[in-house]
Image (tube, rainbow, N blue to C red; front, side, top):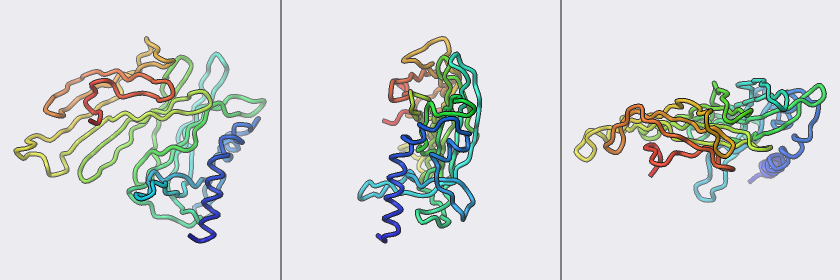
Length: 272
């Protein structure tokens, strides 16, 4: 390993460990100033503000995460009113655009996109962090997920939701991703939402006469109930899996403290 790469990695680790500490102390800052504390690198090759972070892929021998550079941008920014005052919910996404040396990078299929969520509260004439997580992965082939939606997840609390999909060896798999505030942190939940093996060429034979194809959609947020401080999510399932057919079958996903939303008991898309 060259001294240049070693120093870059050391700087990255130091940045990732310290970012949450000093960013949370910023007061009376603009949104741009707050986010710059979390994404401190300016990449001249792509003319973007970004960060070196976990690519979502690891070394198969050492389990050490591969690092790569992401250009970050705001996907959604929504202000809401709460009994505690105004809150600004921000979702940022990142595309893999540069490597650890700052040079332009070609993203591979194994790399994920990057995502961060922030909840800001007013401070003087600016904003201050209330909840934040700047270092999550979502999106395929190094591209950040776009089109996040803000939903009510608890009384006077909101979260962002989206769906991540990927194809490996003909298997299509998708997951709902729900990001929810929890104290000064953001919890990431993943709930399997789609499975299909129709493109594998392995169904239609005697051992598997029928392809499996099943989908779950976020049907509604159950605002009539609160469990562990959060509303349950109603999931509607359609399709077939393991020889069973499902039509508009409703399952409830409950929030587990510190763990986020869980896949329901008996949920057909839950991995065995």
